[in-house]
Length: 325
Image (spheres, rainbow, N blue to C red):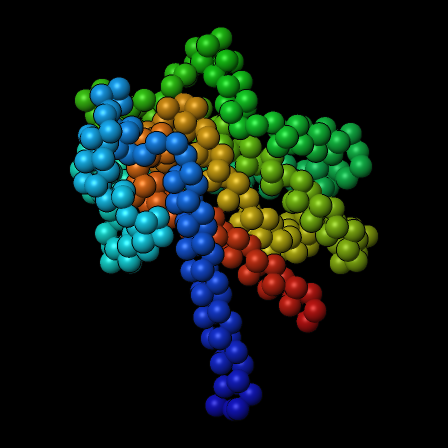
């Protein structure tokens, strides 16, 4: 192997290690901010559990039992050390391991998120391609304006609108996405997933439309696409053979960059529809001042978001190198 190849491989390995280190630092720092934010809220797990029965003596006793009397940074470092060993702590109110409490909600959110992501990519890409191919025309303006209107609308407003129309007025779907009584599976009543998926997908797809539109409009004006049209090829063949290959990488980058916003929307939408997923669990962890549960849920959300940004950045760098080459 040549010295140049060795240097190239060494530089690539160094870049990967540095990105992994940056990922770990970003994850730890963001989790620390979440932990400090919880500490800044009034009350703690002891006062939340005792409620109206709280007395200074009982609060002090429960605080010591939960270990909440320890310094904040000490508890954060201790949680991180245990998490690295696969121990994410305990739900203080129930005594259950956090990992056990997260299994069901995480699986349900994973299903919702996976379906929504597929719909976002399909609908958002199709809408962006349609608008880009009709750049400056009425069809482009209609699609772009509708997408901008949805993106500018808060997630809970979009969800509330869907509830008002499809649950209250039409009665097609339930207004709340509760699991069937006596069954822990949402697949026994899949109708409860429809409105949350539609709400999440609608927001994500409209977020994706505009960047895809810009890429398609730019690619549509390139020389090789124009030459294919001038050669007399059918428009469908020009789009499939000449235009689409050039937009795959930037569209994939745009789709990856939408993932973090999709995750944030999922948390809000799940809470709105009372869907028993990770978002609802995270909100309950804040309300009940559950530090271990909140940290575990936040770590998952933050890690997925950072990974999506990492993938989007990597795709962008790869695209830049292709253009330079």
